[in-house]
Length: 191
Image (cartoon, rainbow, N blue to C red; front, side, top):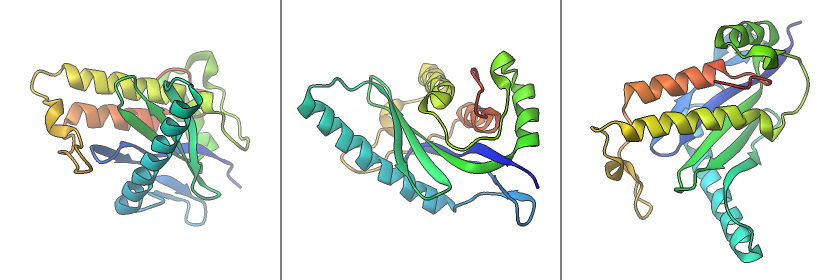
């Protein structure tokens, strides 16, 4: 029997960009997305409510709002959504599939990313919020690189008043999201 470990099922800042990654299905021994693009879009939209509730709670309690939101919601026994908000209000979400990758495949992926001494892949239940910090750091770096592109117009892509903006169509940004989603395993310290 193959041991499965967490993998990224989806990265996004809905509705601007969504990257979906295949998960391991032990019954068929294949990889396929665990949800449809529409289901992931709805899941990412539901996390906006959690961001809003926590922002209101932090404003009432006098706690400053910064960075890592940690676990936003456990969707089911397999999926969990984690969030991060930049100081400029850009919200990023990482949906983790707790049984999304075979342990042997994860060890190979960690070796190709060059995770260094933090690449020890072990099969264990649960996931610490800190294990996703490299993901959000890499997502933020990719987003900053996108903003540095003189041909990218961020105002066209900002969702205004509940209306969605244009989707991010940058191939470089999409390639960065793909690299992040495929390269992360628990214990990786740099992406």
